[in-house]
View 1 (cartoon, rainbow, N blue to C red):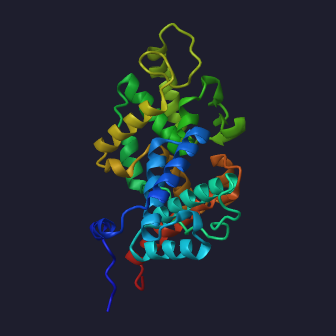
View 2 (view 1 turned 60 degrees about the vertical axis):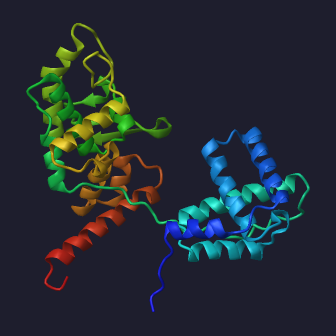
View 3 (view 1 turned 180 degrees about the vertical axis):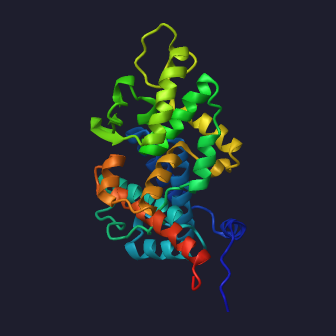
Length: 315
């Protein structure tokens, strides 16, 4: 017989039936939270979640100060059976570690019962990449007949062609672009510079933007940013996010499936799907570690598996 996973309503109902919080535990939790806020300036939302986690344990088994490793392990196991997510249990363990470290510092305990407890494995978040057809629709959305539309078209084409981070894109100075050689000099995290090839399509739209749109936006002013707003300033990350959402809607892409960083993910995933070398991709993305780049192989593998399952005779 298949076990039924408890719902959130089930868990709330059980919580209401648990014994009240012992006065000693309530006072200890309050003192810990006050100390945590005073020492570390922890956000109120974090304090509230720590309070819920510690009170939950104290209601399950009173006398927090005397809890041993076996009790904490059993409580984590119970929560897993009750359907709490690995992320929720990881937060609980963070609260317990902070709490018992505080008891150690104040001399209430001589050991840390959380020392050998392993955090639950969290599911690895994969980047959200658009399909190549969705990218085509997104890139076709801006109206290149207007100065701002031509600017937006050039920005989107450049981001997809190079895999730039959003912050790198909006901060580009005009001097970073070398159209004659077809490369872009990018200053990434930690002030590290890298040269990124542009590609013919991105180069074409950048040339049009520089010839037709940027002079209109700059007027007679000599301005440093490559991309300019109607006020002659570099666009912010938030402004770029808004225009990506607007064009995604025009292209028929669900807003929740798109983000500015999604273009970077799509760039990386599509390159891998077409046979790009992982180390070359690392250089293009400006990752200091190859392990950061390797997450894209998981995305590419997922998409290739779906493609195989859909089209292969024995998929």
